Image 1 (cartoon, rainbow, N blue to C red):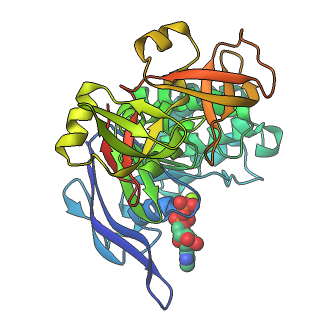
Image 2: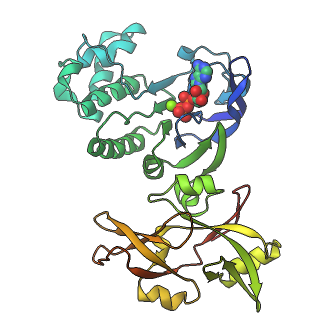
Length: 373
Ligand code: ADP
Ligand code: MG
């Protein structure tokens, strides 16, 4: 049983007391797998290190199971941390590396042996227990680092970009192994990454951060479908969401997203909500994901008044999908997902229809979402 609460937590550095973490509020339930995601420097590691006790808390409280831990030394917090650089002892065997923490705690030898062998079995590194770290691959070394965390049987796992040093293929494999491990051990876990794919695939809940401030806390589907602002919308998803600047205009009882080059009709539901918020006539940013724009006939039939035409600049074949990059006259190319079977020449004129039910609208100045699916 382990719940964690961040209550108005701040971290300030330097003489000018600059906030690198600002008013951080988060409640984590027992057995959750929460991912902190955001660009480098946004305060993810600092937040994690405050929870681990490796960094002082400038303001606010952190609770573990209803007890404030602000002044508790790291060793008394019952937390195990795994880092990007696994920091194994080069002269010790895998077995000794995993056992090291337990030896320090003076556990009886047979208990240590049981714990090490159990961890090795879970992580499938039993055949390597007598090897030295240099005789292991990157993935195997990361498993040993995980083994060291597992044997401590902690209340909480903290993982700070643990897969960043691995090559792409191994990273994907370790991703599923970590999910499996979490299902098996059911230990509350906080996982830090700058990689939106890791966040989307691993998290039970995602915390998106920017400049030390939480932007949104939600389950992956919610973050993807209903991002709270343009930052979250563009950070999560690959290729990223398309954005277009324009104006909402009411014409003959219908609401349209209007630019100097094209108009897109907004479906009833969304239109009503936008009008109710008195947004007709306002300049807004429209956001739409590449998979919600299509060159298929079905889309033209469903959304005849939301068609946009552009010039094909280049495309990216991703195996299962092909992404077209169209110049529609705006500052950014419009990215459209199509079937890999379709082939296009550069400079070709292409029309695509937008599923306007999936379009999101954001405040042009603040970037906050106004309304959406
Ligand atoms: P992330 O893990 O998201 O990449 P960090 O938590 O490591 O970000 O850093 C957040 C910010 O705090 C960065 O701007 C970083 O430069 C700053 N920072 C981190 N540690 C220190 C420190 N010891 N002294 C001053 N500034 C620091
Ligand atoms: Mg970091």
